[in-house]
Length: 174
Image 1 (tube, rainbow, N blue to C red):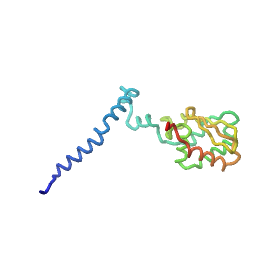
Image 2: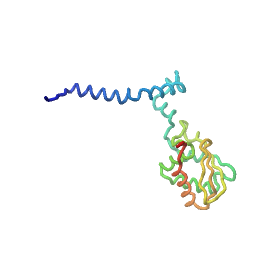
Image 3: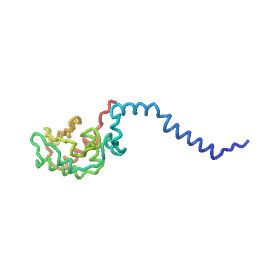
Image 4: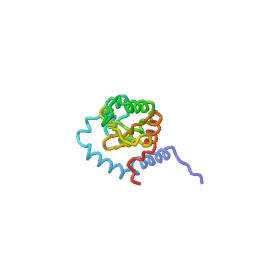
Protein backbone atom coordinates (compact mmCIF):
# COMPACT_ATOMS: atom_id res chain seq x y z
CA UNK A 1 0.00 0.00 0.00
CA UNK A 2 1.44 3.31 -1.05
CA UNK A 3 1.10 6.24 1.30
CA UNK A 4 0.43 9.50 -0.46
CA UNK A 5 0.40 12.92 1.05
CA UNK A 6 -1.10 15.93 -0.48
CA UNK A 7 0.36 19.40 -0.57
CA UNK A 8 -2.32 20.47 1.92
CA UNK A 9 -1.26 17.72 4.37
CA UNK A 10 2.36 18.86 4.19
CA UNK A 11 1.40 22.50 4.73
CA UNK A 12 -0.85 21.51 7.64
CA UNK A 13 2.03 19.59 9.21
CA UNK A 14 4.47 22.48 8.77
CA UNK A 15 1.94 24.95 10.19
CA UNK A 16 1.26 22.69 13.20
CA UNK A 17 4.98 22.15 13.79
CA UNK A 18 5.79 25.87 13.62
CA UNK A 19 2.84 26.70 15.89
CA UNK A 20 3.99 24.14 18.44
CA UNK A 21 7.65 25.23 18.30
CA UNK A 22 7.07 28.99 18.51
CA UNK A 23 3.90 29.11 20.59
CA UNK A 24 2.87 26.04 22.59
CA UNK A 25 6.30 24.70 23.62
CA UNK A 26 7.36 28.06 25.12
CA UNK A 27 3.96 29.26 26.35
CA UNK A 28 4.69 28.84 30.08
CA UNK A 29 8.05 30.64 29.82
CA UNK A 30 6.66 33.40 27.63
CA UNK A 31 3.69 33.95 29.93
CA UNK A 32 6.01 34.30 32.95
CA UNK A 33 8.22 36.76 31.03
CA UNK A 34 5.17 38.67 29.78
CA UNK A 35 3.72 38.97 33.30
CA UNK A 36 7.04 40.13 34.76
CA UNK A 37 7.74 42.56 31.95
CA UNK A 38 4.29 44.14 32.20
CA UNK A 39 4.59 44.35 35.97
CA UNK A 40 7.68 46.55 35.53
CA UNK A 41 6.99 48.25 32.19
CA UNK A 42 3.28 47.78 31.72
CA UNK A 43 0.45 50.11 31.11
CA UNK A 44 0.10 52.93 28.65
CA UNK A 45 3.81 53.75 28.75
CA UNK A 46 4.43 50.97 26.21
CA UNK A 47 2.35 52.88 23.68
CA UNK A 48 4.91 55.71 23.77
CA UNK A 49 7.70 53.61 22.25
CA UNK A 50 8.48 52.25 18.83
CA UNK A 51 9.70 48.61 19.01
CA UNK A 52 13.36 49.57 18.40
CA UNK A 53 13.21 52.22 21.14
CA UNK A 54 11.75 49.72 23.60
CA UNK A 55 14.45 47.22 22.68
CA UNK A 56 17.18 49.81 23.28
CA UNK A 57 15.62 50.73 26.62
CA UNK A 58 15.47 47.12 27.80
CA UNK A 59 18.78 45.75 26.56
CA UNK A 60 20.81 48.89 25.99
CA UNK A 61 22.18 50.07 22.71
CA UNK A 62 25.26 49.33 20.66
CA UNK A 63 26.25 52.86 19.62
CA UNK A 64 29.73 52.54 21.03
CA UNK A 65 31.48 55.91 21.24
CA UNK A 66 34.74 55.10 22.97
CA UNK A 67 36.01 58.69 22.90
CA UNK A 68 32.83 59.73 24.71
CA UNK A 69 33.55 57.11 27.38
CA UNK A 70 37.06 58.49 27.81
CA UNK A 71 35.78 62.07 27.91
CA UNK A 72 33.29 61.32 30.71
CA UNK A 73 35.56 59.11 32.81
CA UNK A 74 36.14 60.28 36.36
CA UNK A 75 39.49 59.84 38.09
CA UNK A 76 40.14 59.34 41.79
CA UNK A 77 43.18 59.59 44.02
CA UNK A 78 46.43 60.37 42.23
CA UNK A 79 44.93 59.82 38.78
CA UNK A 80 43.79 62.57 36.44
CA UNK A 81 43.16 62.58 32.68
CA UNK A 82 46.78 63.44 31.80
CA UNK A 83 48.42 61.16 34.37
CA UNK A 84 51.03 58.97 32.61
CA UNK A 85 49.21 55.75 33.57
CA UNK A 86 45.93 57.14 32.24
CA UNK A 87 47.57 58.14 28.97
CA UNK A 88 48.92 54.59 28.64
CA UNK A 89 45.55 53.11 29.59
CA UNK A 90 43.59 55.03 26.95
CA UNK A 91 46.25 54.39 24.33
CA UNK A 92 46.04 50.65 25.00
CA UNK A 93 42.24 50.71 25.25
CA UNK A 94 41.74 52.49 21.92
CA UNK A 95 44.05 49.99 20.21
CA UNK A 96 41.94 47.04 21.36
CA UNK A 97 39.62 45.38 18.82
CA UNK A 98 35.87 45.92 19.26
CA UNK A 99 35.31 42.52 20.89
CA UNK A 100 37.93 43.22 23.57
CA UNK A 101 36.42 46.65 24.24
CA UNK A 102 33.01 45.01 24.67
CA UNK A 103 34.61 42.44 26.98
CA UNK A 104 36.06 45.34 28.97
CA UNK A 105 32.56 46.81 29.37
CA UNK A 106 31.32 43.42 30.56
CA UNK A 107 34.27 43.17 32.96
CA UNK A 108 33.64 46.67 34.31
CA UNK A 109 29.84 46.98 34.32
CA UNK A 110 28.43 43.46 34.01
CA UNK A 111 27.05 44.22 30.52
CA UNK A 112 28.60 44.67 27.11
CA UNK A 113 25.84 47.12 26.16
CA UNK A 114 25.63 50.76 26.97
CA UNK A 115 22.68 52.64 28.48
CA UNK A 116 20.04 54.09 26.17
CA UNK A 117 21.42 57.61 26.76
CA UNK A 118 24.84 56.59 25.45
CA UNK A 119 28.38 56.47 26.75
CA UNK A 120 28.11 59.83 28.49
CA UNK A 121 25.66 58.28 30.96
CA UNK A 122 28.03 55.41 31.70
CA UNK A 123 30.13 56.84 34.51
CA UNK A 124 33.46 55.03 34.49
CA UNK A 125 35.67 55.72 37.49
CA UNK A 126 39.36 54.81 37.54
CA UNK A 127 41.42 54.91 40.71
CA UNK A 128 44.99 53.87 41.44
CA UNK A 129 45.76 50.77 43.42
CA UNK A 130 48.98 49.45 44.89
CA UNK A 131 50.90 46.44 43.71
CA UNK A 132 52.49 47.61 40.49
CA UNK A 133 53.35 45.46 37.50
CA UNK A 134 52.61 42.14 39.20
CA UNK A 135 48.92 42.84 39.80
CA UNK A 136 45.82 42.81 37.59
CA UNK A 137 43.23 45.58 37.29
CA UNK A 138 40.16 44.94 39.44
CA UNK A 139 36.61 45.94 38.51
CA UNK A 140 33.86 46.79 40.98
CA UNK A 141 30.86 46.27 38.70
CA UNK A 142 28.28 47.81 41.00
CA UNK A 143 30.11 51.14 40.84
CA UNK A 144 31.69 51.01 37.33
CA UNK A 145 34.94 51.42 39.24
CA UNK A 146 38.30 50.21 37.96
CA UNK A 147 41.22 49.77 40.34
CA UNK A 148 44.24 50.19 38.09
CA UNK A 149 47.83 49.62 39.24
CA UNK A 150 50.40 52.20 38.12
CA UNK A 151 52.05 50.09 35.43
CA UNK A 152 55.54 51.00 34.27
CA UNK A 153 55.05 50.17 30.58
CA UNK A 154 52.42 50.09 27.89
CA UNK A 155 53.15 46.41 27.19
CA UNK A 156 52.59 45.43 30.83
CA UNK A 157 49.37 47.44 30.98
CA UNK A 158 48.08 45.77 27.79
CA UNK A 159 49.02 42.29 29.00
CA UNK A 160 47.44 42.73 32.44
CA UNK A 161 44.29 44.41 31.11
CA UNK A 162 43.71 41.69 28.52
CA UNK A 163 44.44 38.99 31.09
CA UNK A 164 41.88 40.51 33.48
CA UNK A 165 39.11 40.85 30.89
CA UNK A 166 39.81 37.44 29.33
CA UNK A 167 39.46 35.67 32.66
CA UNK A 168 36.40 37.54 33.83
CA UNK A 169 33.74 35.05 34.93
CA UNK A 170 30.78 37.30 35.68
CA UNK A 171 28.17 36.69 38.32
CA UNK A 172 27.89 32.94 37.88
CA UNK A 173 27.14 31.03 41.06
CA UNK A 174 28.38 27.65 39.87
